[in-house]
Length: 392
Image 1 (cartoon, rainbow, N blue to C red):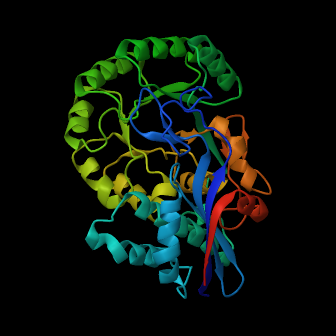
Image 2 (image 1 turned 60 degrees about the horizontal axis):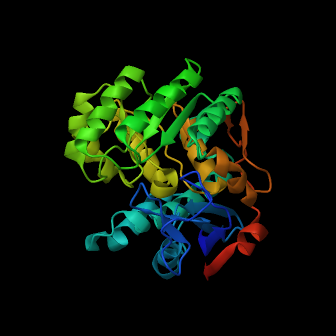
């Protein structure tokens, strides 16, 4: 079996993620769909954007993948179109690790060892694992471990409402749906964060856990104050508290508080995760499968086991291709931690599938067909892609 063609889709669907809980796009960057939330320094899009890929073999078997690109998906798409796609033609899709390593070494000597380069590799890698599972007649998760979990618990990421009262009402509704946790993210004062977490704890009681994502917002002293408060409240974890390059600062925070510090969204490869684990700059690892790929994710899982470290996968703005890939990786772990769920993005993410992914009473229901277990609505993908490239 050989890779015969590669198609790349710059996917842009008109759905606003509303990370800040409002419909507007403050600080809009002129001439673009991108804007800056007042409390953070990085860009968001008013659209749901991603880089999707379809790989076809000489046997007619097809695999789908996704490289997360919540802004500028044209970049990984261009890398696949101009370099990675041509490089993998004729290769055996049943050996994703060999393809992953070949692509990594095409440009790593020039410093391209993270970011959009690995995102592009992730899209290809996920499609190859989808193909491998189909070729072997197994779900992706069972390629790693037989008798994978068919269901596992989810937490809801974000309470996208303007007022505290509305967010507390939403938290109650989430609890009633069966979800076992909530993560909030805010870029406001330490006192305001502590107050909101205390209010949410009253709603959740002992029925669900609470986590806080700082999105790299706070100073070392502010993070310490928050961490000490989270210790008293027994939060599940404190995510991305400091600047994303600051291993030393995170390590000092880990030593100073009991609440686990969760890190992973900015990282891509096992080589990037390793110094964080060595220096104890994290207590929980959060690889994102549509940013590191299934091959990269499996290597990170193996490394985390060496350091006796828990994993909960990060899931951000993506389609159900990426969600399915993440669920399969979680399914093959023994006693996985609670996993991230983008409740208000889920309906939109499912639009690209002929049969949607399902959540039942707060649990992910693993699609058990071969490969990723999903059927992509290719007509829908094509109709919502601004650019399409085919390499053969």
